[in-house]
Amino acid sequence: MRVKFASEPASAITPPEIYAARRQFLQGSAALAAISLLPGSALSATAPSLGPLRKSALSTNEKLTPFSDVSSYNNFYEFGTDKDEPAKHAQSLKPRPWTVRIEGEVQKPRTFDLDALLKLAPLEERVYRLRCVEGWSMVIPWVGYPLSELIRQAEPTGSAKYVEFITLNDAKQMPGLNSRVLDWPYREGLRLDEAMHPLTLLTLGLYGQVLPNQNGAPVRVVAPWKYGFKSAKSIVAIRLLREQPVSSWTRANPSEYGFFSNVNPAVDHPRWSQAKERRIGEFLKRETLPFNGYADQVASLYAGMDLRKHF
Image 1 (cartoon, rainbow, N blue to C red):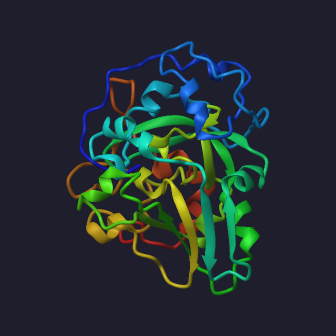
Image 2 (image 1 turned 180 degrees about the horizontal axis):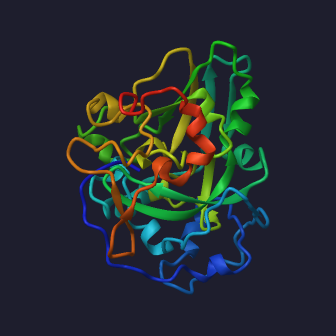
Image 3 (image 1 turned 90 degrees about the vertical axis):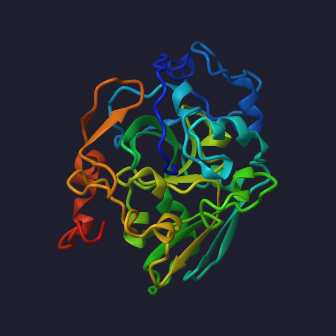
């Protein structure tokens, strides 16, 4: 998610019944028209289905953030800088047809259309915390599979050390691209070992449905131990590189947005503390956990590194 100051909504609506029922992952953006943001809404019985989702042992068991908030309180600057603007303006995005290229330091450059991505590996539900650098957080049941499954298809060379994500750059579909808030297209990156970590999710849905446009349709990445802006949305290209890429927010303000951007409550943002966070739907703040609560799984990736310097 992209960063900007904003106040959180007061909404604390119970998650829709679609999550309590046996969830089906819907194919195609037309399914979005069948979904209401009101509690008790159901998915269209006529929507094409990809079958039940596997549950992941990597999920947290924390209370879910309501679907109504997840789908209406977003950072996605390509559709506006206020939290409510992506939900208002993102319907101009056309998530089909869609392709994702894998190129760079690979032996087999590949291009996958959305249907191929959906079939590449078994889809599973992963309930992850999402912590934004601004100090708010959510708990979201994402749908996808490890990003490593996709990267391996292109057979990275021994020279590949980093992975760069490049997002859609089409002002006709994304009105926010007419602003100068960032250099477009939006770019993010991970170290190769981070991208290949089992927690890093190639994400194709949430709450059992295809990704709403405002949440990064039709394909995004989620690295749950990093601040939300690291999770690139509407990805069209994945490049494996020898050298560390320059991410969009790092380019815009390197003193505030480092390449790693691991959730670290001991390192303040220059303009605010990172020690606490406000979970959307809750009034009181809670302590922020190192690596967003995923230290047991990922801290070893950074052994010997000064995480104050490599922030």
